Image (cartoon, rainbow, N blue to C red; front, side, top):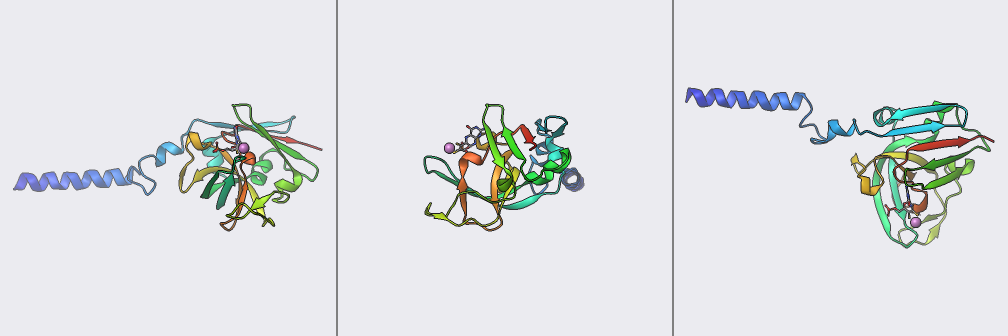
Amino acid sequence: MKTSFIQCLALVALICAAAACGCTGTNGPGAQVEDEIAWNLTLTDGTQEKVLSFSEVKALPAWEGYGYAVSTVGIKYGPYNVKGVPLTALFEQIGGFETGDQVGISAPDGYYWVFDDEQVAGKGFVTFDEDLKEKPSPDLTLVLAYEFNGTAIPEEDGGPLRVVVGTAEPGTITEGSAWVKWVDTIEVERS
Ligand SMILES: Nc1nc2c(c(=O)[nH]1)N[C@H]1C(S)=C(S)[C@@H](COP(=O)(O)O)O[C@H]1N2
Ligand SMILES: [Mo]
């Protein structure tokens, strides 16, 4: 009887310790590991270069909203709740972004996508409704996303860092070709 009471106490102490160390946090057992994903993001404008680790990207002021895309063959993916860093916040790390500048975003597979200043300001994208009928664009935000639906973006979905053309409200679909997967380099081309 006495032994089992002590065993019970020990178990309670163990659970408390686990909770205190974050092992049973709301994001589950992976929460601590996610912050340590080994991935570097290189920001450059041709003259200066800054390398941010995955956790340094996550430490920047976050943007949260929605992302919903369509591939060139008409497959919709999303809608996702998206969390990430607006590209404009990343540009501040390397001297900003001005009218006339462009940005090239690339990944280790060789994919490379260019956004002009209008798109960096959230305009000039083609947008669709749920039936894939083109509709006028709401204000959009170019985001370097690190979470879809509250968890780290899986590698097969383009994680750990993926471009999202995001919206404040759900229900707007954007073209998947701009959603660069596995982003490792962001290069500002100054005008
Ligand atoms: N790095 C990288 N990102 C990429 C691509 C790619 O080939 N490489 N393809 C793009 C295109 S054309 C589309 S339609 C979507 C496809 O996303 P999915 O593979 O998640 O369906 O990713 C975009 N991002
Ligand atoms: Mo595509």
